[in-house]
Length: 156
Length: 135
Image (cartoon, each protein chain N blue to C red):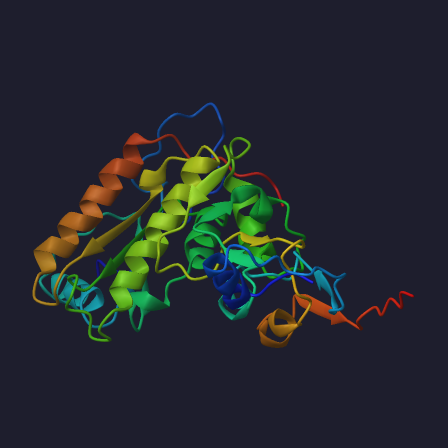
């Protein structure tokens, strides 16, 4: 299947490199079960190819996502994180995705403050019946991350 | 003794009344910043407005947090990807209810210990009141 990609998780890339190939970079997508994951499922059933860099993490609702999840994913090897949830106002738990929007905005400000591109963390919304929108969101994220230099990480 | 918010309101309406001040007799409030999550429960319950919940957050508080503290996990992760020293305060969106800087003003504090009783992180300690006997 296209959802479970076979690419290996990229190690901390040497600093001389300015770009990463599509299989080297990795994007973690936190998807809500009600909309984004259903859309991802439908796109996989339709055999739409996804970029090999993306890894999906299933959440009951994007309201579960915390700044700790997003920043830890970046620190542990992801080059970008995306949060994919329901359309605003159509959260199945009423306001979970509003919480996610604010937390993503907070993480973007944190990243910007320490000199990391805020585009590495982004929020997308879609309904369950829009698999093309999900694929477009993943491709957009992959394009943005591909244009950025690899994320340097300090040793623990 | 410092005034409560209501006491200050009354005094604002009565301009010629001067409060008789005396030394504080409340508990000694000790704030443990490394345990604080920045939720602002202390500010919500404070009768005198000594604790204020800010709409900003100092990123240094995250980066300097010790590893075993409540903010330590996020701070350690952010430290790994950080490229430079943080520029200062970041604004916190309204729905991010924690990760806020709490401003504490010891001058206004009554020493009632309400904050310590309500703190969900046990980050505030209210010691026994210090009685000063004056002749």
